[in-house]
Image (cartoon, rainbow, N blue to C red):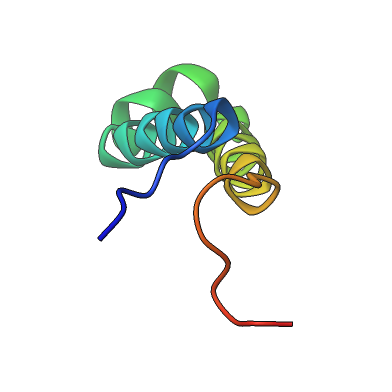
Length: 65
């Protein structure tokens, strides 16, 4: 079996999603200091993280074409 290699976009996406998870875990203190912008920050981190994961061309394709 060959090892699946992931590109830089995959790791950037995972890092951003980890930051989104961290911001979600600390949403109460963040919302006290940032207000509605804490939720906006979370949505932006999650969206950009998913974008980077979906645009990663590394690894093996899921289904044959």
